Image (tube, rainbow, N blue to C red; front, side, top):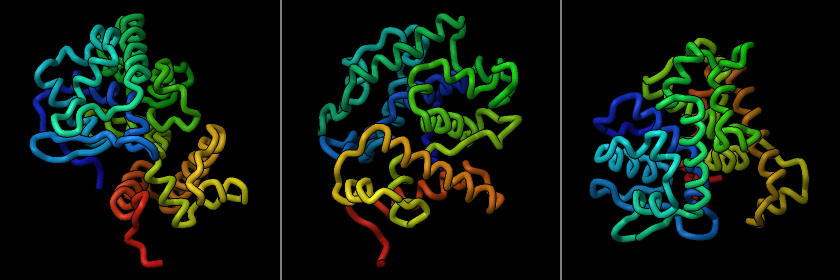
Length: 263
């Protein structure tokens, strides 16, 4: 299983910009403290990534220029809140200013590169993810702040996976497509035992629901990343296949406050 398909009438090249923008600001949508990002789309309650993606799709259908380089370069915190506003829950997006700054960087860098859409970078790369001349997609997309800040490169691999799974792009070296580790997978792998915390102090912090440091967070997510890549190697399945397998199970059956397990 993969992402639920959302029907739309948006051209492919515009969709590449839409996904690039939405993935860039997809973080902490269901924070441990504070309201979760949620609202209604077409009469259905959506949360987190689903709400974020579907609201941007509906807004872009009405105004395709919304995800143009010029628009992203100038979008404001208020603009993001307006897109994601829900009549019942109001505005539940956190740090809208920080997210606007990320989108501004994307728009301005596209303008500096002389491109209208991120699709142009796929054409420049000839479909390679990594190349010796540093024209691979992973290298080209790392020019954007939102896609270079995380050492585990969750957003980068998430975006590349979305473009592949939705049939937009193919890659000449798919073995370089790593897995985008999110907190559903971290939670599930820690509970399942695929990854074990060696430090008693860190383990106690996690079990006690305490906030970990940025370095500890990176170490945990990197361990989950390495575990999934190892499982892919021994199972002869792609990291992308395993990511969506684990992601769907942990997202639906291994939630933060409840689980289907009887252990």
